[in-house]
Structure formats: C-alpha cells, structure tokens
Image (cartoon, rainbow, N blue to C red; front, side, top):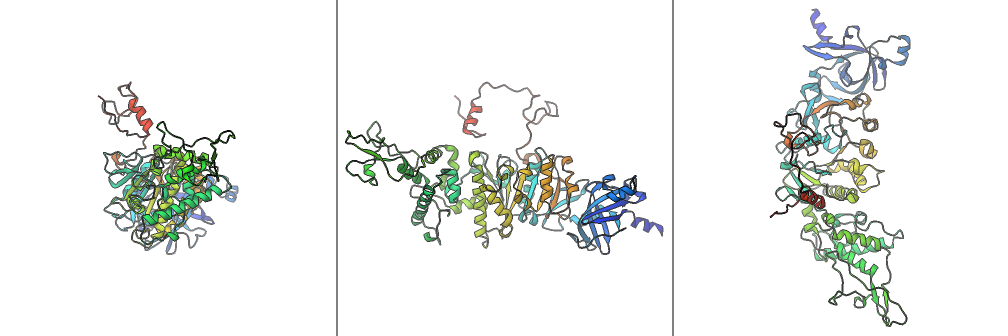
Length: 634
C-alpha cells in the first residue's frame, strides 16, 4: 500500500515559498539534494536552466520555466536569516494546462505558499506540445533538445499570419534553419497551395529550394529552366519611390517636382487611352498608379527643356522646335538624340554678340535639374539598372505601351505552379537596394490588400514574405522605403493574409517597432548582449532566464518562443539534406578527412593547379555575374 503513494510523489521536487507576479521562488525538498530523480525508469536532472516544472492547483496545472538556481535564487530577506541558504529555484510562470490535455498561455490563477512543485515528464510535454499527425495545423521543424522522442511542432497559422523572426549570430545555422522551415512549408503533399516569396540578398537559397522555386535574378543561367530574369518595372513604383531611384534630390522649391508629377500623370492617362485596362477609368488615375509610361521620353523632353537653346533672332518662338539650335554631326545631320536609347541631344552654345546677326539663347523656364537629368541619363545607358529601367517585356515604348502587363508580373511572382518565388537581389546596386525592397514589399501588400476578397487574394491563399539579412535595410529610424513597407505588413498584414519572416544576425539594428510585432522567435546563438536584450524586450512572456541561454546554444539549435508554440522549446532544428542547404557555408580551409577521401573541392591542404590566366576571374568581375557567359577559345 506504500508503493502507489511513493510513485505519485516521485515527481515532487519542492514547494512554493514566494510569489511575485509571474515569478515564483521554490525551495527543493531535502531528499532532492542529489539533483537527480527517476520517474517511470527515466532519470530527470533537477534544476536545469530552461527546464519545465508544473504546480498542480485543483483541476489546473500551472507550468513554468526554471530561470535561476542556487544562491542567486534565494530571496533577499531569506538570505539574511539563513546565511548558508537553502536550495532555491526561481520559476517564471507561462501557462496552464487542464486534465483534458488542453493547454493555454497565460495565467488565470496563481500558486500559494507551500504548493507542491513537480517535474514535467515526457508524457506531460507530449500532451502540451501535441503530436504530429494528430493536429493538421502543426508542422515538425525538429525535436526538443534532450528528448529526441518529442517532436518540435509549430502552428503554421500563427507562424505565417502573426509574423516571425529568425535571429542568430553568423555561423549559428540561421540560413540552414530558414531553409529547413521553407522546405517544410513548401511540401506539396502537405501544402499544395503554399505561397512564399523570399527576398534573397546574397543568392543563397536557389540551391536549397531549386526544385520547388522559381528564381528571378539579374543574370539568370539559361541552362536552368527555373531561373528567369528579374524585372521590376519602374512604372510600378509610387511617384516618391520613382523620384528617389531616378532623379534623386530635386530643388527644394517644389517647382520641378510638381511639373514632373504632372507630366507623369499626363503620360499615364495617355497610355490608358492607347492601351485600355478593363474597368479602369483614366479619371481615377494618379501619379502613384501602376500604369506604364515612357520614362525615356520624359527624360528626353526634360533634357531638351533644361539644356536646349534656340535661334532667337527676329523674335523666334522658342516653343517651335524648328527654331531649336541643335548641333550637327560630320554629315550635317542634327544631333537630336535618341530617347529610347538614352542618348541626349546636343545643342549649340549660347551666342548673343551684338556684331553677330545670329542669336542663340537658352530655352526659357528651366527647372534647375541639370545634375539629376545627367544622372538619370547615365542610368538609362548603364546595364546595371536594366532590371528597373529596361525591364524586358514590361519596358514601355515611347507611347507607353508594353508587351506584358502588371498582371503578368504579379502572376509570375504569386501565381506560378511552384510554391516558392526567390527574388535574388544580389546584383542590385547597393545605392537603390533599400528603395527597391520597399517597392517590392509595397507592390505585394497593395495587391493582396485590394484583392483580399478574391480567390487570388491573401485571405484565401496567404503569402509569407521571407526577408533575409533584414538588418541591412531595416536598421534605421523607420523612415526608409523598406522600413515603412515592412511596418505596414507587420502591423496590418495579418488581416489581409500577408505574413513576414524577419531573418537577421543583428536584431539590435532592426527597427524596434518591426521586431515587437513578430509573434514567434527562432532565437539561435546570440553572443552580443545588446542583441539578446532586444529579443527579450520583444517577447510578451517573462523569459529572461531562458534567453540568457542564447550564448551557449549549439549550431543548429534554437529556442522557439511565442505564439506558434504552446510552450517555449529548446529545439534542434532538422536541417535539410546537404544538397538542399543554402549556399552560405564557410569556405573550407582544411577538410577533416584525408585529401584522398575528401568530397569537398578546394582548401589549403589540397594540391591545386595554379592558374596564370585570370581571364574568367576578370570576366565575372566586370559582368558582375558569378556564372558568366563563357568565351570560346580557339
């Protein structure tokens, strides 16, 4: 008759001595000083930082995480009366479970003095975390660290719509973790209608997701059927975005800005007349509307206005182009330029000498934008900006008509037969990266916002946007284009079916407003105290003790916290196979295997042919393409 009572008390490790909000101080019982307890034949280490305990209160079990152990956990007044101290633990309460197996975050009641504190067994954890296959909305991302039999399950609904963040120092396995998550979320057998867009700043994910992704890059490899040219037509940008990436800074008086706005609006209305869109009235068009127009023609007209001269003798009318003073080429033809090619016209110099009957003056009403016009002309002629200013079939003719429409572009990104779309932004000039990312995010958000009641909209088919290296374009005061668009997504995207996954190695540099809206965190190894504090401050739970473990996590290990998991989990993320990992591994200096057994090319310990012909080296550099078009050698 004694044995059942012993078994029922085998999990008791201590009693509650002090309750302060969600923080509970616990003293260990005298027979638990060894720090080890056996339950159902399994050994449990008592007092492990980050381990779980439960406090039964009637029909409810309160669950908490151990955050402090030992002398530092002794309350101040107790330490004065007992200088040698007792064995204490500090527990942070996080949720409560019911006898039916249901678990919920938050606390409806608190423990009291002398309430028993119990170990949490694997059976308890399985009941809390759930089991794969039992609940369709849970996906397996790995296993709980220290308990390989317990799957680490994540609620895909909360993961996508409530936003998430994957943070970790370089080398902690962050990119591999993201690749593992995307492999799970893009499984066609499980999620045949998944829709994911990856903003890939370094071109890492094409290798990891190649068979289930369409890749858009500036220099696609023609041998890969899933690689396509990245086209972001300038006319899909808002007016302010377009001005920043084309003209740049305009005079502060606003005259040039207003005239450019009016000319763009007129050009867009003219395009709708030549190429109508069903259901769209030109009266409702603004300069922000994504309607094609010829930027080349606008630039050419403004260039003539700014640099032009005319033959002013005899009261000539400067608005009559027949009076304009073009220079001539060696054959005597006027150099009028070529708007579509971005070639400017050339005008004769001003001549207003009294003795010379030929008078040449400037065209009137200049805008003082010579510098911006010269810069825009250079960009129209440089291939680095072709993805934007000469966007393939989306590039307008001089009358504004295009071969393909905005519907074709959105269909490529959101409506393809593959679940993942990778926008490889590695070849974009760094000076415009922030504005381009902001434009992409705004286009995606606006499209899903206005189409929210359609089957293609976000409510019926939500979109996940993965933002790699987010600190490089979200690390500001929130005023940049990328930051403004991201804040809009994390604040309002849940209602319209667009979720964000922020990936960063420096969470301290990300705008706090954005980080605080992330409902789920995959916190990997973080050595910097400032980064850890930003993660802790963004969490809704009182989990400082758990986040203090971040500096000692192993590579590929993460603490998953937030809304997508019932309880915070220290998890070993399941990495994808080696041939499906992102192209972000460290260069190999010396393989662990002997040279004859090594499967990895390169390294300092292998005899390599020292090339003397660096032709391809320079070719890739000049083309800014790691896979250049090879030159046939005779």
